[in-house]
Image (cartoon, rainbow, N blue to C red; front, side, top):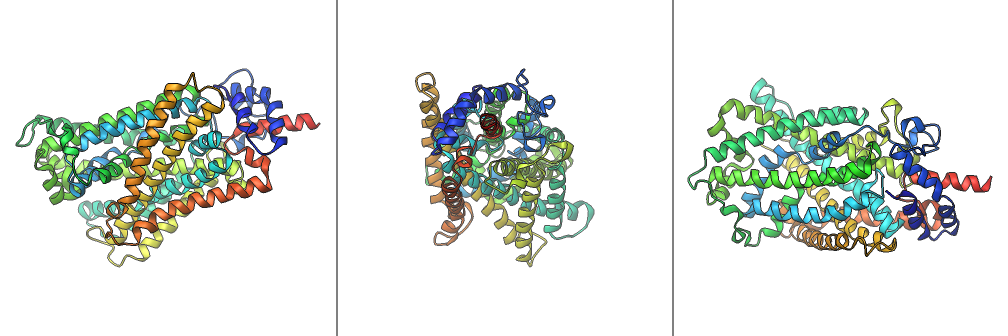
Length: 550
């Protein structure tokens, strides 16, 4: 890890001569911050005993040493909601796009994201900031681009989290109607879930990790049991590998299927968000990212293949169109019985809850990082009480989600029965807005990795990582283009619907708004602009500047 040198490189590109001079003088100070963040002897300031590398106090830094490899991995994987993907995303992809080769798509996307992760993980050794994507983009492409990325990340992850509340509320209401004979509107459990997630967001991150871990492990176990049962009792075509045949990827629906499938991976890229809360971020973050993306690719490829085996490769598309989101439960009941299927229904709901909590934590930490660096009001850049959680960011996310859920509830005049239009719109509109935003963030981060190492004079030593980042960036841009092109299909709108440009337009507005904020900050406060993405290192620059002036 070379925090000090990265600080110098980042600040030297600033338009502020004062900031550049301070960065050079602060080299030693920033280096001591790096040592402090990894438990080395250079701890400074009143919070040194807690491993916090800032002289401004504990409330300006997330608590270190909260997460190890296991806790970080579980926090990241929970966002992938494995049971929700197997029961929801996979049948939809089979039904809407008619693509039998979905297992092969997961393998191909796994390769793309591993290529992305090679450069992303290497950069994570140099940048430890809860702002993750925008911090990385700031270091490579400058503070203005970083400000645009920050706003994009805030909007995208908020959309992903808020979108799940609709389907969560509907499924909980369905369970109550089935097992307790209680009929309630979907928005009541949605708002209750929102309140519980908000409360957990104020707790220590290791407590959240334990909650996520338990739910995730049970989810995965149930899906694996189904996979084994499907292979042990295959459909009429036996243990066919037809779904891995490249010929199954022909047709006009492949691009749209890519958009659906890449959304299933979202979560692995969140590992750097928790870097400040791990004991050895330069080791744990890259390790967890590769474990996550490899594990997700294998798990989803295997599970989608098991679905094709259970129904039969030539019957999976018509079966998905007939059963829709009930496909997994239909195939499970005939092999494992009604009790197991009932348990799976319940865990389908808890898996969505785990995903909501995971995205909530990410949004809260992005808000914290942005508040700490002046991209949001300073109140967001402070932690809360002994938990060290970003409480104000947690409140922001809870409030935004509450407004969105209530707005869709008001438009719903059929609160019970099959999913109503507001529920489906809340889930599909916001889920795809968020997915598009994260795809664009990953593509931009790939470019930033290349620029970052080239500017540091490390192009030769990092050449192979730069190549993998370039390949991943190109692939991600292609997927983003398909996502925008086929947005009407993704959200279930007609080809002439205004939604095909209005909804992606939200992402464009977020980027434009963030870039505009960056340009204004660059003009009015160039020193603050130069420190976008620096996180706790910015405090060390301030400390060095104060030392020079005193």
